[in-house]
Amino acid sequence: MSFTAELIISALLLLGGTFVLVGSIGLIRLQDLYVRLHAPTKATTLGLGGILIGSMLYMYFSQGNFGINELLISLFLVLTAPVTAHILAKAAMHNRVAAIERTRNLHLLENARMQEPPQPSGEKQDQDK
Amino acid sequence: MLDITVVVVAAMLCIALVLNLWRLIIGPHVVDRVLALDTMYINSIALILIYGIYNKTPLYFEAALLIAMLGFVSSVAFGKYLLRGDIIE
Amino acid sequence: MILLEGFRSRFLPMPFHTILLLVVWLMLNSTLSLGHILLGTVLGIVIPLLCAPLRVPQPKMKRPLKALSYIFVVFKDIVVANVEVAILVVGPLRNIKPGFVAVPLDLDEYLPISVLASTVTMTPGTVSADVSKDKKWLYVHVLDMPEDEQEIIDLIKNRYESRVKEIFGC
Image 1 (spheres, rainbow over the protein chains, first blue to last red):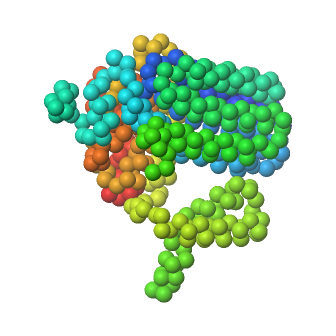
Image 2: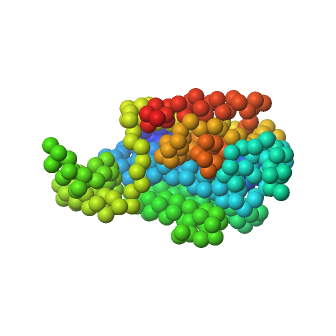
Image 3: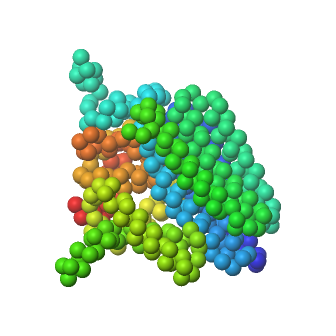
């Protein structure tokens, strides 16, 4: 394997590893669940994408055949990552997980939970009675 | 050079997995724990791919594909259970 | 001709899915040998036949070429989004100003809405949380809220929703 190929593969692997690590750091650091959802779903798509492309290139350069399977994995992950994030956000709202205080438009959380059109804050409580 | 990179990236992924495990343990709510578990699936796919490069074999891709599919299905099943209290409607 | 069409809808209820199944089968086995092509074709015909009664009618893609350019736009945004989110996550936490936004939708079918919601989840600092029951509002959680929330709504509507609308022609 030539030096350039090794350099490219190493760069891709390092990039992917960094993004995966940042996603996990975000999972620990961020304050509430809705903010925490952002870190893993985003960082892991590019992180895993980098590692998959790196390993695909490695298999091509070392064994001569293109691993199509990696392409299939990345395609599958790109299709499914948003679905997981969406259903977890829905589950969080359904279980009334609290968002941090400085979240703007916090009243929309209750509207989204009931799947109704947005209403200005304050009106909602009157309708419940 | 690639040998060193692979080890470094594997170490990074292991740190990421430990951080996820920490969130899985302390997670204030069940949804946090499901999110941590889902991230652990994705990180373990990355770790398996790195292991494949380390051993210079394309043998582990099927395992990675299986974990990707089962991880997605189980995360969605957990989410459904938290939403409805039932998985199959 | 009508006979041929009837034959097709009887035995090939979903031609697109047949091709997709064949391609995925060949990719899974990563070969192009005749045996696998035959097996993939048989699976591609039998599985849609078994699944056809379960199918919910969805709007057809009117302009597949637009979908290709849409994928490229989204891919570029994913890369940008990743870098932005990574910087926000590692930087000081007080820089993160989360917020909820309700985006009015012009789409009215399930498939285009779910395509839009998935794209919103993949791209810069936004996660789609829910859709209202009348399919007119998409609730979005924003990681880094600008002062004016109309900016985010305009971005989603102009950059993604108009393109999805073009693809599905509704």
